[in-house]
Image 1 (cartoon, rainbow, N blue to C red):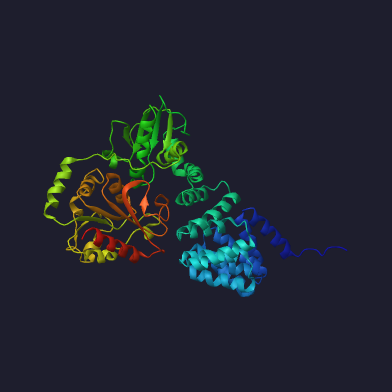
Image 2 (cartoon, helix red, strand yellow; image 1 turned 30 degrees about the vertical axis):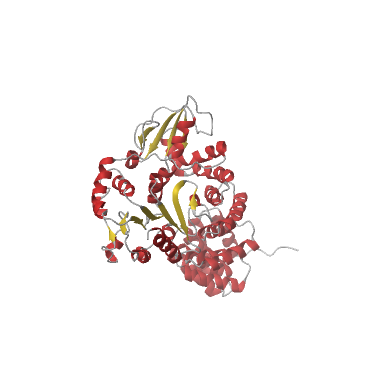
Length: 493
């Protein structure tokens, strides 16, 4: 039997689709528009034009063609699904949810719609529904990489990192080259003290663009992988924030004690004054890098220490004293007879998880009612305005306008902390600074705190004089503050 000859429209559509699939969008657009002039009631043509315009970021035009497609055919799943995708792309998540639900009324098992819906719920912080629909996505498509990643991240953000580990493992099997998956899996594993595997996965961060830029721009060519460093030299490069450098610098000093080696430590110029220069050579970013045999990034050192010792490196006090500044603050604080309590409530608001770790100063109010305590603000910059906004000037001694105004970060803060009886702080650089100095420190932690604080313990393996107060559930700071209030009242009667 002879095949029926293709109509003119069919031939045009095949030609348009071929151009479309090969990325020749201008030619495909031209042919689709020609088809519409002949017959404007073909939903798939309207939809395909919408897809082209969405790829070209012509959002309004794309939306108009998707709407035309579903007007032609009220059961046209692809049109609704593409509208949901478009709305997600421009941040109109509630509208995306509406379109995704319309898709699922027609086809409850459509993976793309389930995924779009999960994503939208995640963006409006409805994590319960987001998890439900990511799980449904994976039920119908077990190897859906994005669903795996986002589901694992959702559990991670909720503090349910044990659940996230299994899902990140699966995502890593689906796409072993993905750096972010390995990085997040590392943090989840380390949080639960799976050190050997966690430190191995953590090394994947070195493949990120910012690390490769440092390596290439400085012509670094021999990464240290735990080789014998005796009679060798190594460049250690600090990474991430100031708090990370303060915490992990101990490993650079440990290397100088363990090997007969020359250590060159590259750090931010603002904190170069913190370090003792006799054992290791300190240089600032931008300085000429001396010749060296190996290089390593700072947070790789715990891996190789763990391989040797099978534990973490405990407290190491290295921060220099400045007697002149110390005495200045001792004199200022002489009039405060009561125990002096430093408080810090706000971290860097640019940090993506700051909303979890920082605490509104208002939450501390119940501590201010405890008699015979002097509260001293350690807040500098963002967050300090809350003292004025809440009329707490008589409850908190605030010296922010006269501290750390030079080129050296924390220059005054360090010596203030040395003069205090206790520091109460959120998970910021102040926690690491105070703990490293050896002042008694209480760290207030969110339910999904950073891996370095681990889980289910109220002490820190990193610091001797540090106590941890943890949320029992996400965003519940009231119970944490009440626990602090009770202990403060008990310890400082």
